[in-house]
Image: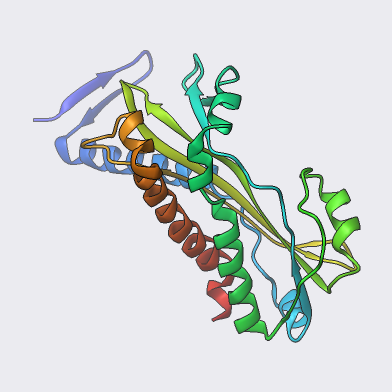
Length: 239
């Protein structure tokens, strides 16, 4: 037998099959919402793709992004723990952590070179501190036809919301491919990842111990995931 839902202006009978359908649709809606919130994609259109062939490209260099402790605010979203950033940033752990942006940027640069026969220009420019796009373009626009601007947005470890003392790793990065002459963004994408062991999450000591071996393994997963995600989203229609 079905269940009745009564309202001021209607009475509707819902059987078990209808409940299942509504439940599945709700899950799909949630999934679509989560994906859209974590994606900021601008793919290469056919006109811009033609312009890439045989052109030169330069990769923007930024100062190393440091690993930091992240705390959740009262609303549950992540926020850097202001009182502990300096302590974590000067930790010996930093020596063992490479900025994933270097590897991901290199992977995507190689893919651009292979697909569009682009030439890489190695510019002798000091790593930038500012993330200001206008300033960055002014520095790099005379070096090559296109600028590959890849940067880590946030990298750190944070405790599980309902499991204090146990940690996972968050990594966020963004990509922009810019036409030096027009200053237009040809391609844009971002990547947000959380890596960890939900069934047996590590303590902070285990995460950072042994030269941060476990933390580095989680970041390695982020490198592979972000490289694939950005490559698939940007270039999939131009294989």
